[in-house]
Each structure stands twice: as C-alpha cells, then as structure tokens.
Image (cartoon, rainbow, N blue to C red; front, top):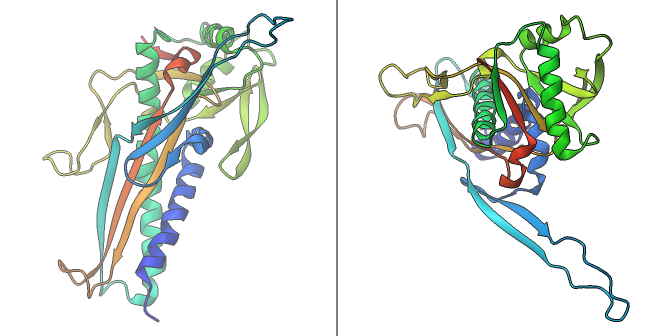
Length: 305
C-alpha cells in the first residue's frame, strides 16, 4: 500500500512536538504557552492584562470606576531552523520507510534539536537577567554554594512572595556542590514534578524543584551555526568565546513562556524527489522564549566568575 506522505507528515509533526516537550529539560516552560495564540509561521500573540489599584468607596456615589487594559503583543520566533535528509531508495523500501524515517527524526531531535532548544532558552534567560540587573557572577565552592543559592531564592521571593512555586535549573556538578555543603542538613528532598503529560520525581531544595541540565546547555552565550558556512557544517549551537558557565537559574514556574513548533515536515517519495532516487525529508522548526517586561525582576541567574 502506497504511503500517504501528507497524513504521515501531519502525524509526525504532532508526535515531534510532544517528544520535544518531554525531552527538553526546559519543557516545563511550555505549560505557559497556553496563553499564546499561534496560527502558523513565525509570529505569536501573547496577552498582557493590567488594572489600576483600589480606590475609596463613596457612600453616596458608590464604587469608583476602575480601568482594565488587555492587549495582545506580537512576538516573532527568532529561531527558524531546519534540515533536509535523504534515504536512498535501495536502502529503504516503501514498507520499511515509516519505521526508518521515524527513527531518523527521533534520533535527530534527541541528539541535535532538543539540546539546541534547551541551550538557547537558558542563554536567553541569562541575557535577560543580566540586562535587568538580576544576575551575579561568583566563584562557586562547596562552602558558599548553599548560602548563595538561598540568598538568590530569597531575593526572588521578596518580589513574588514565598507561596509562588520556583524552579531551580542547574547542572549535576552544581547540585553536587550544594549537596556537599556542611550546612545542607535535610534541605534536599524529593518532589513530584510535571512536564507535558509526564509526572516524575526530582530533587528539591527548600521545596523548590531542581531541574538538571547538561553543563553544555548552561552557557550564557552561543554562536548559531548556519550549517552551510565553512567550518559550521555540523550546525547546532557552539558556546561563544565570551560565554560563562551558568551556576543556576531561578524562575517562578509561570514566568518563562516557551514554545517550539514543528512548522514543516515534508516527505517526498523517490519518484517525486528530483535530486536523487531517495526518500527526502524536510524538517523545519520554529522556537523561542519570552519573559514579559514587567516580570524580568522575578528571575535570577548566577554565573561563574
């Protein structure tokens, strides 16, 4: 039976977006994308609501009229990335194409796409925090790690309150320094964590879940490889020369708004492919992250000195 490439592509696009959310260490940020209006392409609309404060009640005239402002700001997803792959017709017959291509895209997304999206998000949060004066560079040791992260947690809680859930993002190495502190006591516990349609256990510090990300994804700046310039053929992201390691990122759970969309997945049969006697798969991904201006003072990033 001939493969319906259009239906196959639609199904794969849905599975890829779900797979990305599950695999990203920053996948929890996409829960905040429910407020985002996306109709395809590289633009999204994010609502912002503001109100005025309380006024005195007048016994003769009653309530003072209040003002409510609701506006939708348009943001562009700056990360427009893609690749094309070919599977030779002699290597993959029509029967085996579905399984082989699904494995190809899954490996590509796991090994290349997910690490790039994570790294981009963390570096963008670091840049926003630095510009907002919400960052500090320190030489981290087992002696000062716990005191410093608690200092930064309290700084965020001083803005948002201590009943707002915070997420701590750090590498295994950073967590080890905190756990090795002589002051740790029983502060490290286990907490339930939900990401996408998955629920699992994570370590927590002072009731704040800890999300562990590979150190390679926790840099303050990356050079985007275009995949075609000499020396950049491998594509992906490369840590910039001026990049610093990120010790940790502290954000309220509802502040980072992240989105990734497989905007295009096209499959061409060997008979349609004009370049070669091969199955051709085109993959295009839009993604980005935003933090609303009025919430930039609710995050904190610690980097290495």
